Image (cartoon, rainbow, N blue to C red; front, side, top):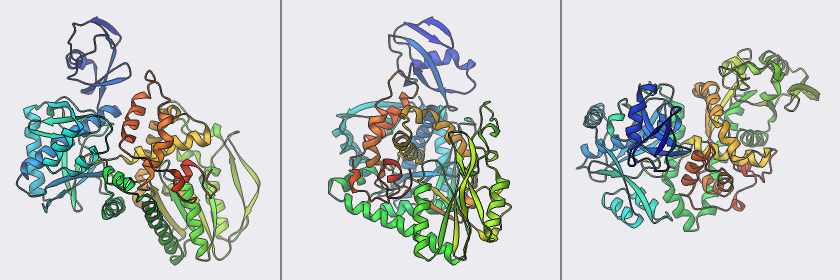
Length: 551
């Protein structure tokens, strides 16, 4: 068969594995090869190359797919170590809950206390597995057989999950005598997982792994106490109503509990907004500054916060930082040679600060409007003057950055960080990345409001994420309040809108693998009709039908 690699075309015998070809080219690749891609399809390295041949490219830890494969494989190795060391503990379990401080926050069940001594034992056991180079094997089993297997070992979240799988077979991974189910590809054996650490934190611990920027070294743990608190509260609430994973959510849908679930979630969110408004009023804050990553629902949140402020007798004035953008030709050039429209240098901070100070002093100010068609800032006679009970509600990606507000009085500011922090997981060992929920939100909204295809949104998503890493996440812990805008019921709703858009991406297109991954993920969920969602819900910002002015 004919294979093209790194621009070179060679003949290989039938039965050649991707690993054999990867080893011939490893010296040409800066990082270790973890997966292979033939055309647009991904393969684990132990797989045989299809006889049709074609062009092969390699995936490393510096690529998203390789990075995620490393993470899954490291989690698998960690789980094997924990279950081995705690084999005699009744009802023992490990829950991989959410990302935190550059790693994965996890906790233990069965009354096992997380101690430095236990984590040291687990790490030592993982290092032994790494040195033993244990193969990570995958086999396909009947879905009914998988249900029986996980029931026998007490992994009830997986047992319940498979009750809703429409396929007759599922893939099970094994590491020696330990087996598990994972949503995605794995590396070939444990020797690939060389960099990891376990750090005690809160009531659990954090599994630290390399980043895509540095695939060969463990990232430094950065405690994020505020983020930890809001994520722990959200997860605890989900578990308290028995909706902590996808199977439990599907159970709720099947049993007719959807209406009640939506009303409970919306009540919790409305209470959160009301508490934030009361805090602003109690502290007599005049500058409310809201920031968060893409598709967090900042616009709906600011509208609903304004309503809560009005209910307290205050008069909110919405200010969008985007209206203070400099003219488009003045945007700075990024490292890639393109204009960086997400840089804080795109904002006319001097004019913004001057206007805000004048408003705080009781002066009348004409506020600008940015024309995104012409790329110019315009003035259209929109004047504003603050009264005694007036509050400025300012929204923008840089609102938590002190550069944005350094000229404004500290005692007048109240900073809010909002993000969609998914509070459920696929099962105890397969977390749902918060970025996946936000990407699905954006795919649906971009198509509805801008006419973008899912392909368009996926293409620009990596750039959006880089902007968030630079301009938003470093400042999240400086917020006075953190708000989780994720709705526990939203993924079954978004499925109805996102799936048809994702199916439009063709197999030969570069975005196909990401579309396929998202479709497989959405397949876990039973659908929920959008007709049940209130008109002021944050989800309406994405699917449409909001009673608020959110586009």
